[in-house]
Image 1 (cartoon, helix red, strand yellow):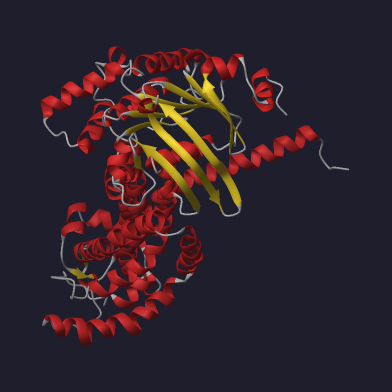
Image 2 (cartoon, helix red, strand yellow; image 1 turned 30 degrees about the horizontal axis):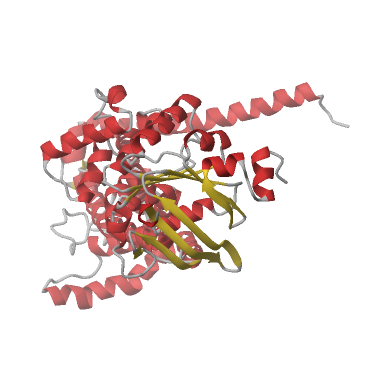
Length: 296
Length: 253
């Protein structure tokens, strides 16, 4: 009936499982090592400090300063999170604590659909709607001259992209808090708002941090949609209405073309290495907070 | 006799959609006594408790009619101050749900809701309530630890202390020992017996021996109906209804 007997099938199956496990466990290391080896060329000529903090990006004369890209990435990510975090938190609290259950049942598929839209579509939407809105209305209204392609546009598109992900996690977190805990606080005479503020938020804190960390990592690494609206100007942005450039956009815009110049190629690998290190760092910090606040 | 009644339940009906959970329930709960509500699972015991402190408000699908009179106030009336009302009763649920904070703050939070903000007063009362709940001696050195690190039996006593901290007149307990080991259960039972001098206790249970040990009054419910109620001697020694006899004899169904 079978090619192998039961014992042999067991061995084959476990072997595959172990191989998959090793693959998953070692992939990040391999990635790291590969990127590191590829960026050795540029690291050989420039000090790490110089690469990260130098402001001039002129590959033609051998100047590779990543500072504008790093700052651009941070700007875009931070502003996107400033929009995302409060919106998601308030929405999650509202739909789980204040509305009827059927509302959530309608919301859930809607959120899932939003989460499934490819990022190019968000980018297009940014070009067609957000960029003109900023250059024609928001900028002039605030008395700022802007061409629309800006940190703000990128952050806005980004936040619309990551809101569904973060919101879904937050909703799950608030739903997983047992009703009895709520009843316990209410039975002490607490109002619903006191219950949310002192008990539910605290109970959910590790999860909230994890959700935001997840959103942050996604925002930091998002390439396409940002690249389409951020302006791609190598300059230190002075405010949210200035154009900027991000690390992922740098790689995506230049990788194919610059393979012929070894040093440029190596510089882009270094950018990828930076991205990897930063997202690892995000994860570590997140874990630290989750462990710290999970003791309750 | 009448002045001894703390809670009067009259024609209480609770339904969810087409299912009737409580049917025309009439119960008198005497002051400073332990009233045990007895019955098989799904007979509406927990719903009855939730009506008493209006946690039923959380479930819009529940329709509650009738009267529950506590000290001559019908608490089911909308105009009642629901927060004050809930502070009249401490709630102990099936499993302990300590608040996500330190042991000390679990009690201090309840005190704060009651309006006590003075630090020395808080200190004194935290100690007092933990002593009342028979917990102080075990945890006096661990007050700043997260409450979730206590054993489950200790957590339940912490929840009892927290319930007492809002200065209630009534203690509602919903199978408070069902998740606990025998020794912790005994602790809770002893505490109840000690507390009944100061509080009116309503205890929901399906443990017959527990009811026998600590009850003064027994209400036997089955499928949303009150079958029989009376003093523990009457109901246990001399049950009048056929269903009660069967249940007490352990040959139900």
